[in-house]
Length: 98
Image (cartoon, rainbow, N blue to C red; front, side, top):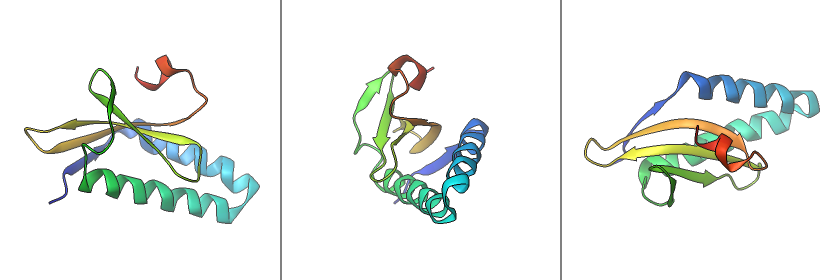
């Protein structure tokens, strides 16, 4: 059974900004980005422990096509996932987990 997912409000803003950026380049790229985000969030929901803990119980999932990490925490006792950030892979490590 898939875990319950909560997405922080900040993540929705990040996604909108990324989609706006890709829309300036290509409508197809923006659509593909959103589809890939959805794909990986569902993958995380099905197997939340698939990705290793990196810092302070945060896990990071590297998207396949687009250069972004999905940063999340998994609470095993409540079987809950909180998506905290979607961040470009070139951002400094300390910015990923603040």
